Image (cartoon, rainbow, N blue to C red; front, side):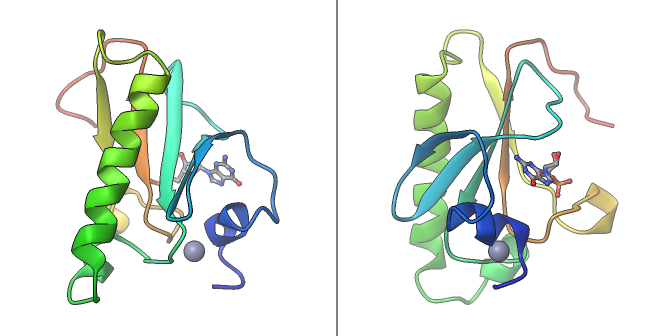
Length: 116
Ligand code: 5GP
Ligand code: ZN
């Protein structure tokens, strides 16, 4: 989508601190980190949220790849031993503010549960 901020980051039109990039996904540091490590992992293909992947051709494979890609980034950032959380906010109750599907990869400190 032309006016989507994360599509622009995926295309390299807006600067971001990119950790890892593949043809299908980009991982970059969140602008407002909520933990010592806070990386966003996005598919290059635009989905507004995870619910929008339902019924889309090949979305199961795309989202499976995205999760594995996020785990590889976590390993690369040294999070395996301490552990980490991967979460995706969907819709207003979850506080989704950017409407391009993204996984938050959070780590580097003890994370509270349940989340707020
Ligand atoms: P959401 O609230 O939709 O789950 O998460 C959106 C996230 O995107 C927030 O954590 C916010 O800090 C981050 N964010 C919003 N705009 C930008 C941006 O232009 N660059 C980066 N790196 N992160 C952004
Ligand atoms: Zn987008």
